[in-house]
Length: 136
Image (cartoon, rainbow, N blue to C red):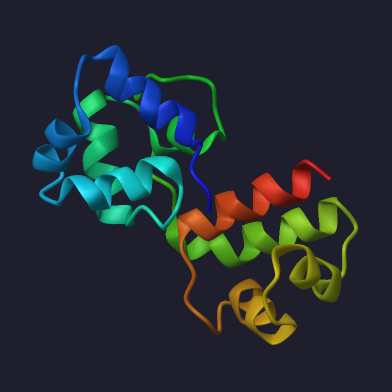
């Protein structure tokens, strides 16, 4: 999943905030925030939502799905649609589940569970998939 970490960093720096400031806003430690900002671990959806609201930007902007920062007319993603969106991406690029699994380094049955909705996934997996598939 990966979030467009440069945008997270840029928003913080452009607003003259330190990592410690952001940690306080997000009710976490500076070390946790630093890990999220650098992309070393998943940025929890609850926290990234707080981040987006604080800077008044959309999740789509933070994840790189849009270059529009504004949240006007923004509709939160329907998380129930993620399995079908994952399948649509795979079909658009004409990949098999096996090939996608190999690219993103997960087991094929795990990927299949995400795509069919049998296993719960999240918005960050969707953006991670987009990031890795579209740049091949």
